[in-house]
Length: 271
Image (cartoon, rainbow, N blue to C red; front, side, top):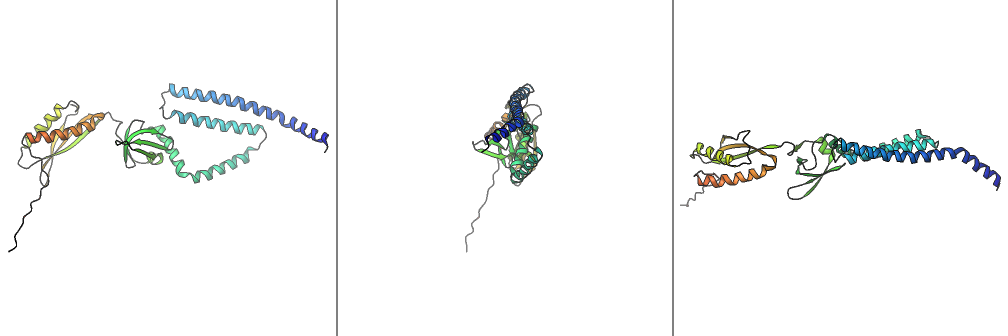
């Protein structure tokens, strides 16, 4: 082995690539330090800008990842690596992965849209994709709901971002609707007076808008009333159930009948 030639070749490699390698290492160290500082600055800027808490980790992580990708490409370019072919291969691989994970990417895009436009927030009660529950987490790919009976529902964000949804927590007030029936022959005015009195006595029912009471239908076996009252959203179900109980008790005391289906059976003795 010609050691002089090997030494000469090694020296030429060091002379040729040494400065590039040192520069690339320095750029990597400085770049990593700059990325860390920018990431912290972005986090503080989002806090000062009162950006939604669920959006901050995603924006910070995504921006940091993009800056690191740019840093890697810069360092590789400084080492003399041809980036055109590398980027082409990376793009082809990304396309193949994207086609294989199209559903996952749809959920990812849905999560981004939800975090940006905020159709609901953590703590909101929503009705979506056939489920009703309180939002406990908003993740990049899924949204986690807790049902009233303490079940955990995991819903992909793709459907939530593109489908219909009811958010029960956006408006501060809600309208409670009831349908109460009395028997034919009962006093309609008396029934309306009793229902209005019960609504006036409940302090949770708002005075404005005014309670609406009207005869809504002359049904097969009952005269039906529609009662509509406005309450604070948090009081909705308590008021709904309490009024049902009060109506049952008071109607009975006031001599008002609450009709229910009945069947008359006639027996005929065969001759």
